[in-house]
Length: 263
Image (tube, rainbow, N blue to C red; front, side):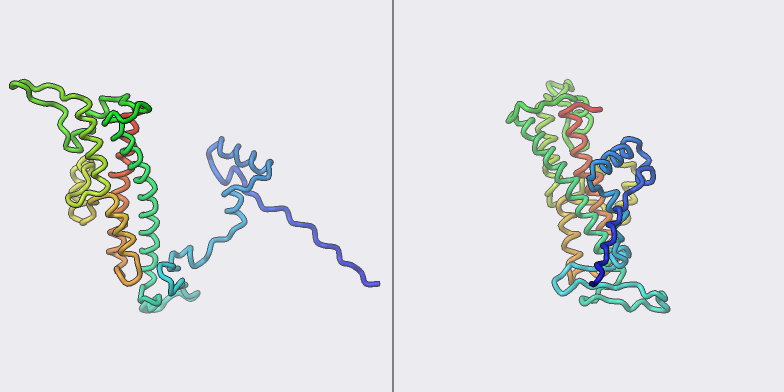
């Protein structure tokens, strides 16, 4: 009679060490709690899942239907000119820059579309279309208005007086909405940066124009057969990131302060 082999015991799943996963005590506590409940988390998956070696180098391109194109670095390295190219002729540097730029565009889209939602809500507040939100920090509104080119005072019979707050709010709301899709100029909030930094952005040609435009241009340039210059692609990624930090994200933060009160 043939012997039946016993099935090997199932291996215990690898779990993250909470102390190594985070230095933050409450996060460590939640990781331990999730593990006791048998809940899979990103920390545990990071222990068991090995990253793709080619993707880790940023040299896998999936931007067109002819790919994916993979340009792994040879084990012995590269002696002389790097001749690796994808089907469209993109070099490893180009592919890496494309991938990075698209990550920047995704982040800018996420933050700035939140900012757009806040701006739309504030516009409804300024137009008196909602009673769910109101201006709780008028001082913050008056502080940011000049950056949008909105006057906070008005001259009446030769006397300078404070402008009506509702007028200021409407002007700021409309100007904030325009930052996402205007067709000329640069972002209004760039003037909030230190002067030397503004001059550096201008010199390098990375001043963002409209928020949405910079995201669209990243997606355009990184499409197959468009921009193959990794330096140029990285410059556009910089412009797109500034559209987030000094555009959508900052607009969202400021208008939330106006509506909910500054922390």
